[in-house]
Length: 227
Length: 403
Image (cartoon, rainbow over all chains, first blue to last red; front, side, top):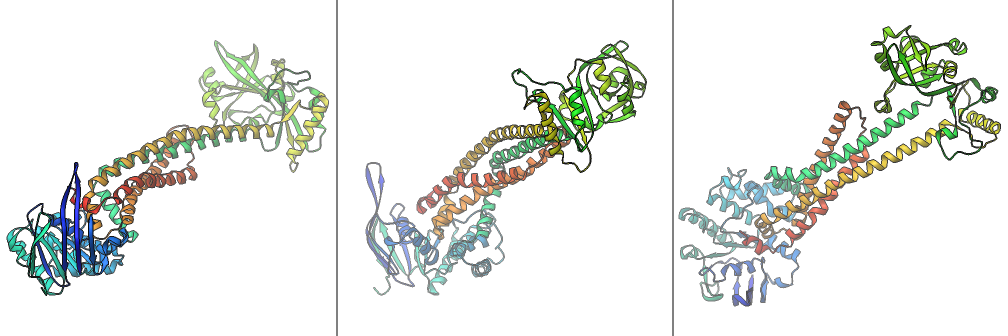
């Protein structure tokens, strides 16, 4: 499903170049639950942004479902993010002025779905994450765990093939974090491919495969399916 | 992405910052309101002046004037300033002429006991009240017999009666001195039209029979011939034929003019002058619109910076650059359209208030309303384009990282 080959990413930093990713090669198959672990500054977030088509590699190639991402136009990239990839962020990234329901509807809006279809699907997703009675609340009226559930429901709105989570439990207490991880586990059991970024070994342990990244290089890859 | 959702989203963003949205639309609001109010006052003033001119043209009467009186130029040989008895004789010969009379006017002192008022004096036929647009409210109008008999009688305007006698009733029967000669007051007159000019140039009038006036002021020019036509006569044609005959008699092809043509000319001039004035002041108000537009652009730029994170989130959820562009453009257009709409209401109300509380008439023109609205949309698009484009060019990852 995901095939990264010799991916490098560098940013200009003063006179020198800051090399964040160095020759990263990685394959992820359908249905895997992968944790990417590493200390801060190791390049794991950059790797996730590249996988999520939010950022482009400086060199190297990236294939998503046999499509060369580097060859896609901005409109095609937006469509890929909309249809194939769901994002869950550490600080939720919900739009503060919209109700939970409208936040979940947003990807469907960009997909061009009709209003009744959007509403029905958003309601169903929110019920599935246990927020049937919180649909019309604004994000600041919800607890951290509830916000993250809304974010997960939103990420699932267009039935993506890949779920990307960047420290999804980072802003939550242990118990709530555990609930969220159980939710991820359930999604994975139903066939969802999940890539999760964390520096917490306990969180990483929910995954079936753990990749360690240090200084922009993969140093360890355990539990790879079929490997 | 459908338009209903976009409008809802734009509305949300604006209502999240109500005061800011209102202040931003204020410039557009004031600009549109002042354009509408100024054009309304301009149009109203124009139609009021034209009404006054129109009313000078009595229905059944043709007015003939010496051309030199209305379009003065350098003195020329053969120029005519006053009608002669022969001119009246010529005019009376035409078929379709019911009567011919003349009016003359000038300034003179009207004195009663120890009071004297410098007054506009008009001499005319017994239907002078129709020609000069006044009603006799106390006493009587002078009659045709008064005119024939050169009787020393006169009708004073209300304001003159107030100044000389204190009230209308005590004026009747009093004898005033006009140019040193006694004249008996038989009636008090009140103007029956709104006269813009009277507001500026007093309204002390003395109306007398034309014959009496000519006796008292023999040196005044008879500067107007009023031809009463019989019903069913082509006024314009009759006027042309009389003017031609009078010109032949005066041996001057340009001696006389029919006032209807002359008034049309004045109307055109008044129309042009007020239109230009309205346009100039309107353009000044238009500058307010431009300043308002700059304000909108400024706030939209701030808004794009503030909402960088939101833009990043939307992009991560699959918003295309076009969708982001349209979203911000819609917000700026929404601000200016709301400003424009409130401005239109305010401009119309201002015109009404001016109409009620001042003597200035005002007519709201639908063209000004349409133009005001059109410009508020155009300014919304023009001033929103740059910030919206800036928003759509953000790199999603930079936008997401922005704190």
